[in-house]
Length: 230
Figure (cartoon, rainbow, N blue to C red):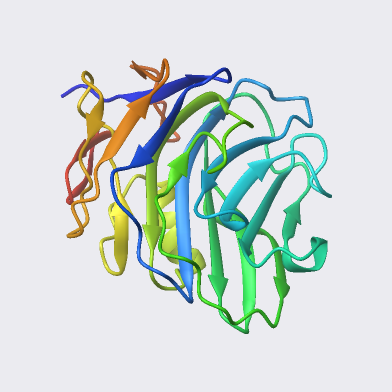
């Protein structure tokens, strides 16, 4: 069984859900990223809901070179964002996750381990809006690299759950959007959540057989909703 990721060239490539994601108070997200611009502070948006909501980007703000910033909801300056400096350790595949719990805390994870966190007092819901992968909702800031297994949940995932996702396992509890990007051709990828909010590929977004690996070097091979096969 072959596996695929999506290759984005940093020009005009991106993916977008066909419909709106629900408004969320607490949420978590996850994805695999192989960033071609490693070693820079280039500002590129990996996840983006409505403006300054569910945003995850490289560089910019206080993230700096090889850093990642999340803007979960109601930016209002750096106090409402979280930076993980040196979050991207090299130009290879790594798994990243984030959570935002209303009026409690937010955190960033790499390969199943928390690398940044802070408490906050943000309590407003996000706006129901499409999810963009590879650019900001308003356009620009395109990702140069490869992305796989983007997931979004309506709850706070634990560190153990992020570690499980990083190992290639499937978690469906609370899933509001998820794509395994296993089609390998065409311009649509199925949403494996019950919301049926499929992804459409835009620009020159291309299928790639360069995929995340486990510790032993074997490529991830996935059965929809069931986890992985090696």
